[in-house]
Image 1 (cartoon, rainbow, N blue to C red):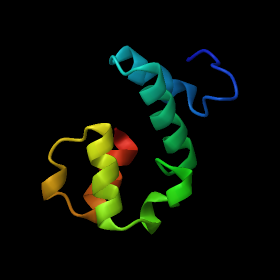
Image 2 (cartoon, rainbow, N blue to C red):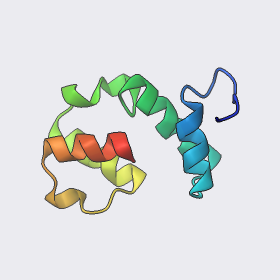
Image 3 (cartoon, one colour):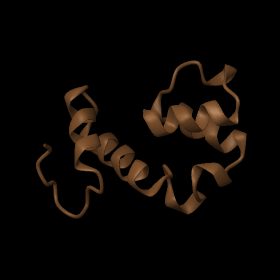
Length: 82
């Protein structure tokens, strides 16, 4: 069981797993919170509402490999599971 990181971290388990894999505190917090909200960035809406180009840019930002060959559904899955 993950420890409680306070209200600023929405998904403590994901945060801890990412930190264990070597992600920075900022990156781990951003991804953990995005998964809890079903979006990487609240200002852009949910993943399903975004265009393929927006999803591609997000995948690039978080370092998902193979993104250029992914369709929209694959990009959404990769972002959610990153």
